[in-house]
Amino acid sequence: MNSHTRPPFQSITLQAGLSLGATIGYHYSEKMDGINKFITIGQSVLWCELMADGRRFVLDCVTHYGQDVRSLAFRDRLTLAKEIIAANPSECLLLPLEGANPTELLKSVIERGGEGIVAAFLDGNYWSPRVKCKRVETLDLVVAEKAGSKSSIRLKTIDGQNRGWCSCRAAYDSIKVGDIVEIAVFGIHEQSGLMREPRFIKIRHDKMVRVMEVGK
Image 1 (tube, rainbow, N blue to C red):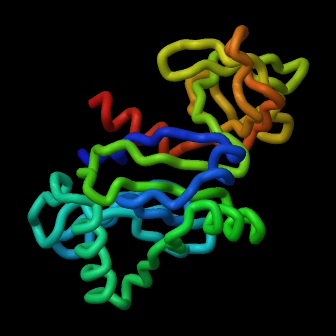
Image 2: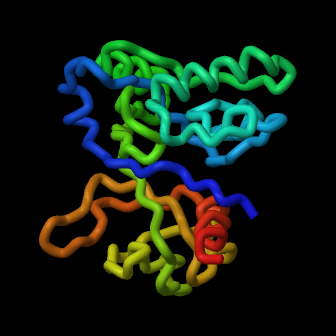
């Protein structure tokens, strides 16, 4: 059983992201759209994003040669992660694209079809919230109900808040009540709490495994 969990995230809208200015004390990098995975290399553990094409992007260092480094500042953990990457060229580990100006980085990522960017507080520990800004907001929701006549699923948050219905067509038969799925939305209606123009993306098998592990 893997006891590691990823740090918390806060989200801002694309509009807010495009008006950001460079803030001293933050590290800005591209947000990768893969599957979260904790990779063990020798006595070190790296938090990575696994891409569909096999690339592995290192997001943080959790354990460095047997020592838990999550209490260290992000700037120091990043240095340790780069050290592990350099020492293990055969592992084909990469770092996400970085940039000093978040607005310019976000524009660059979006123009080539990327998902967005992440800001991490350089002096923050592993559990310090990171800020993400994506092209379209995506939500990880729980399937509460299925409607076969419409090939749609009703969704709710982990804590039970209703988010409404979403069509999933081709994926409908493979989805079960209780699954965690990723949905793209243009925000949430303030009064109703329902999704704006939801679009089914995929079943998050990695999230379901993590939820089950945390619950053990």
